[in-house]
Amino acid sequence: MNADALKWIDAHQDEMRAVNRKIWELAEPPLKEFKSSATLMEWLERHGFEMQKNVADLPTAFIAQYGEGKPVIGILAEFDALPGMSQQATPEKIARAGVNAGHACGHSLFGTGSTAAALAVKNILEKNKTRGTLRLYGTPAEETGQGKMLMAMAGAFEDVDILLSWHAGAETATTFEYSKALVSARFTFHGVAAHAAVSPHDGKSALDAVELMNIGVNFMREHVKEDTRMHYVITDGGGQPNVVPPRAQVWYYLRANKFFDVHRLFERVVNIARGAAMMTDTRMEYEIESESPEVLPNRPLAEIVQRHLENIGAPKFSAEEKAFAAQTQRDLPAKPAQALSEIVEPLAEKPTQGTYSTDVGWVSWLVPTIALTTACYSSGAPGHSWQIVACSGTTIGEKGMSVAAKALASTALDLLNDTNLIAAARADFAKRKEGIEFKTLMGQKSE
Image (cartoon, rainbow, N blue to C red; front, side):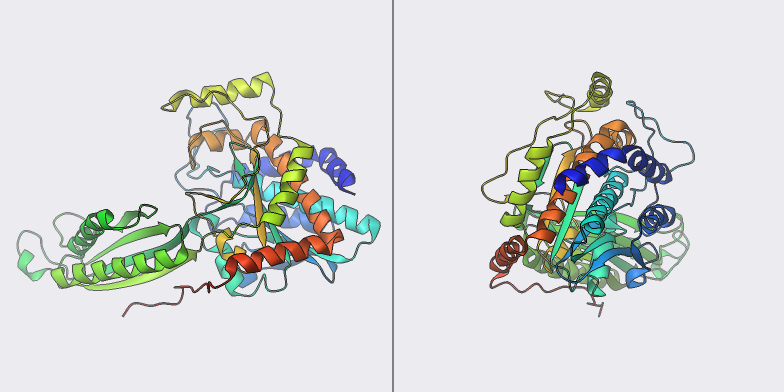
């Protein structure tokens, strides 16, 4: 059956490329992926999937389902682009005219590859009349960490046995690692406007509060664990210099290796914000926009994926593709030894620790989850870079996408046909969660 799925994917390469290029061209930012989402839904509907749209009241979220009964195997699909990352499919940094966003995380490939995997599996299930349920989850807004979280809070994953995912990368490997936990929150300060020259004494500067808060957080950097990450942008600093800003806002991402460390960190940051409000006689309020606990790795699932990756092999690239990738590396501070990776990385004995965050972390605490990466862009390309946008819109990214689709389809078929594999994955899942209760900060409000 796995061989038939691989043949199906090989036979539909042109269709996969067309879908990827369309979503890549659209480059729609988080929660605004209307046409990208519709493109994937139309593809799935055309092949006989039942559709549930507007999941969790998110207009671009959907669930496509085929089959019935247990087991229920889900595949995750993403399709949002990053604002400010406009880039042509060229080996030089050239923005696309009239386009602000770009697929600097390769999500056009992600959504397309996952959907192709689901279509290949459905074809096999239909042909063999295999019992079980296959779902493709269209999850928007991964870049803001909201999509899967809101879908999970709405109960979208409650009856799923296993979730499969992948991501574009510089290497082909099974993702057997923890990610970083993250909390995203906006802090808004409210003051009093006044003429900055004539009557500054009548004003209360909300911008002063933001700056004092940021100073406090920056001094705290010396007194946090080394795995901590704290970054922010001022999203509203006032209108113009001669008006005391009556409103100002700063947006924070707080990260650590464990979600409970992020929770403690968040409490400290809130106290700093309170202090900044007191110092400036302003009023502070905060809103938690999203939260992603660390991804829970799963050894039995990792071994299944690794076996299929080694069987399928890493993508192989032409001389022209390698030349393209090498040209994108010219801006890198240190030139990598290779233009593109063409090997499958070995599976680590123990879970490693990643430095990224993803809302896959949220669902991994609800359902045993596994992910993989495939080589889709030039070696050494920084995350969220123009190099990734460029390669995602070419055959370089699409070759990696094809390998990912094959690995996902093969893994899904194994799980649908052998419940012992699911039992082993769920046992590992229970052991890693033992003694830890995931609690969320979502719903917490300002005083």
